Image (cartoon, rainbow over all chains, first blue to last red):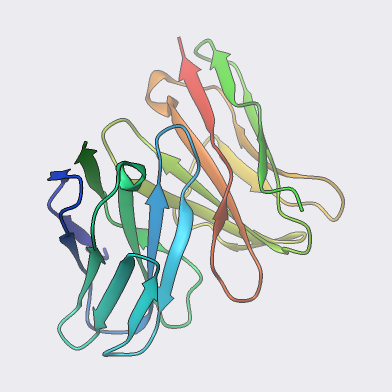
Length: 112
Length: 112
């Protein structure tokens, strides 16, 4: 059984502040780590797919880092805005397998 | 280019009835995945299909659940003789060869 854990489970952040949260995953048989953003009443949307140890990806104010040797990824949001409120999911993809194992997500609420 | 389309969005069934959930992938996507979200839980993998083939069904319950992705038409997740524990949101995702998942908005099954 693959263990993908995200912390914290939920987070309240003041508008304008920066924040980050963690995804931990198995360090063996790694192929890719996915981040998704899931707004209430909508469908999850892909943010990043990361494959290389040390990789850092950025999309606007959101960025992510990857450490495959120790099995963790951080997602950072700079200068939080109300529209950043969502659940952020990470998913581990093992080598040679199409199946993604999702964490339970970090629910982020931005306080105006 | 329409996104992943799921229907029905909401389905109510009585115990013992059958539920059929449909998923039309994005144009050009030949990979379809079904995930289930139980209340207060994350997305759990059920099955991965390509056209006319089940590639990985390791997440499907052994009984009452089946999935298909015919040459023509949508992918269908079928649940026979539903029980209350089947109440959940069922999400379909499709992907191109890059393996980034594009999710539908889900079908919410309620079993009375």
